[in-house]
Length: 110
Image 1 (spheres, helix red, strand yellow):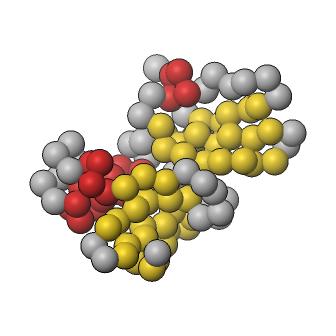
Image 2 (cartoon, helix red, strand yellow):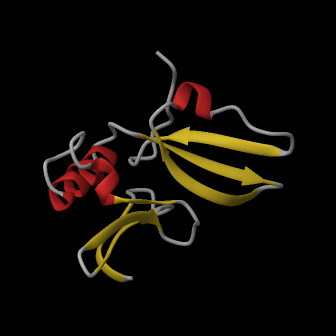
């Protein structure tokens, strides 16, 4: 896919990428497997794929969506956006999940 937009987190630990090929938009964290497609957000984040992806990315960059950083044996294995951080913090044996926001601020249950 062709990279359209790349955002680096303020602490330099994450890079959020919007990829696009032939009008298909995907959002991912550089270097990790997790990704999502823009067409999944049409309706809930905007009326078109481009608007929905822009809103979704804005939600991440403005600390309104939590990010799960999944580690095993001290190495980060995946990074993903979570819509349910209260339950996404549950890790399997040997796994650690850090819940944070784009700014680097830790997520805390309210």
